[in-house]
Image 1: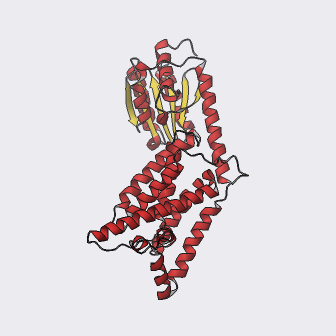
Image 2: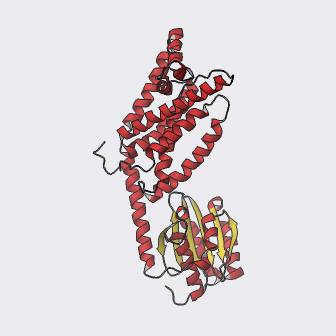
Image 3: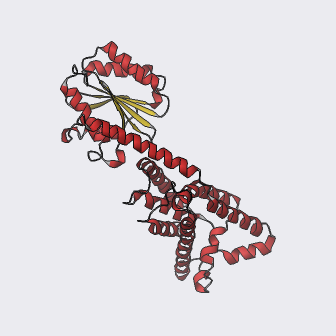
Length: 373
């Protein structure tokens, strides 16, 4: 490190790096990957979120020299969100940051902060980085990184990026045969039953789920309903969801286990719908009639959630964190949609619960084992 930089700014920087990147110092969900540490510059990133953070020491610099350093960082920015935090320099550093932000060509993807000598963080302009703001609050309770820890953290980050890239490449090489087979069955069933006139519709009603599955012992209904759809839009929406989620999960679980989760989730959703239908009729309501693959698809979402939340590490950290954030958003949206008229929320929640429980605590079929199914 540069001996001309005061120990206060160096200590602040290394405390900040510790909170953001050290596994036992910050929150794992927000932990950044340490990419590089030089004399006056440190680089961290959240690769799964498309975010990068550059930490610059102002101490010992002139406004012109610091502006040159900031401009170099901004010019090197090509994609994703970029955040810059300057340590020290007071009002001079803040003025340089504000001016550089105004002149930046990618201003909409930029956020600039200033960390004062006493550890107070100020957002100067642009986007917010919640992980940085949270880290600044914990600086006083965190030990600074030692010189020996920095190379280890950089190497850890490199290994995590390589692991995530290898995992993604291995998953992409696996052809989702079971997923495509399920999609084909749903399309064929729709083409045959809905295109065969009254006879086809009679068969469709005989296969759909509802109270009769329990009243009259027609138990096949709690499974066959998952391969039928009300109309073309219903079919296309469900098949797009199955294709988007199923290919990844099939590669992760293996074809046989994936099919088991899918079918069991369909049955779980079907039983939940049938029971709800019996109770509804018993209370004087109308009999329900349900078709659609959404219960089984919810089971796949539940299974994926179980894998990313489980204690056993079955996914690379970078993959698991990014998937967890996206999946939680998808689940929130789908929970809200489940309460809309015409949507069978019992099939959704029943299938999702079965998929979650079947996969909770289990192991994945790691993509590296590409020869085994």
